[in-house]
Image (cartoon, rainbow, N blue to C red; front, side, top):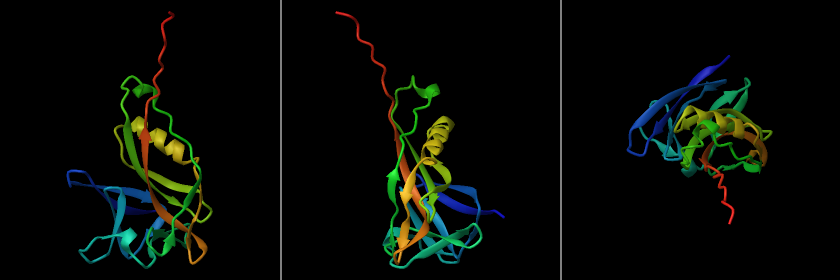
Length: 172
């Protein structure tokens, strides 16, 4: 059974883009908002958004696979540590642009350190989104820990795409 978890995104100009990502977890007592590269949370029915990084207690934002809790990063958790990452391929269809661009995405890093449910939040185009998802699916982490035990956590990644220029030198 899948539930839809609304994640709101605040853009640089302060406008909010609301996206609903279908995720196989059940919504919790908290709402999650993504703003300027971090998660904000609030208890349902309240108005105050709080940076998850400022919270001292662990906050469950949902469940996956039935009963596995998904936390949002807080002071109570030791964050996941990347063990293996791969750079995304710059999309061939965009290679002539030569632009350095960024993609923002979030995912769950599960209690085994695997990437689950990657979702793109901000992208300059669908080809960059596809490349970012393909890259993070290959990543592996040492999982987040709560009281020394591995736990699943909602995680943000800001990925930069830098074109590799194919410069040919003329003979002298």
